[in-house]
Length: 214
Image (cartoon, rainbow, N blue to C red; front, side, top):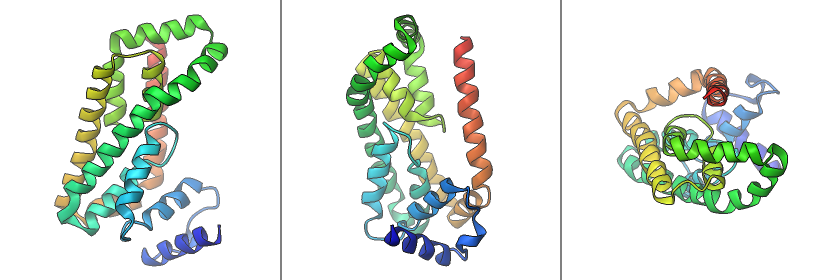
């Protein structure tokens, strides 16, 4: 824990900040700063890959947080960093589809009931590929869709294609934009981080609500 606090403090100093400038309640911001502190280190590519894997099957900080500053730090390697994020995320999606879904499936049926599960399966048979693609491309929680796709037994080929295409577009575009605009892209995220976080949460809730009406 002490090491984590030291790393966070160093991250603040590097960015002209201190812990007092971040509200106590902003745990998400502190986690963001901690992960961001790895951007200029030699283990950054490994951390990026690991985060991409984890975020695809459970709630976690999205790899975008590290990908963008890494691309700013070493523009020539932007494409490599994007490929790491894509491959890690697709691997994590497979974990969600095969492993997490097998654990969650029985519990979900007990909590929601067989009729609700049948509804999810039916919905995924109709629009499953679109849901996975949208989650892979947008801030909608990806882990929820990879797990749901596994529970609903969405065609694996379709699932894999949606994950690869969606994540390639997302991380590829981020790497390209950061490569072109550099520090400006990173400064925009720093300035509007809390606003972006709120908007992402609202968007996720809105998508969930609309899906219940379909």
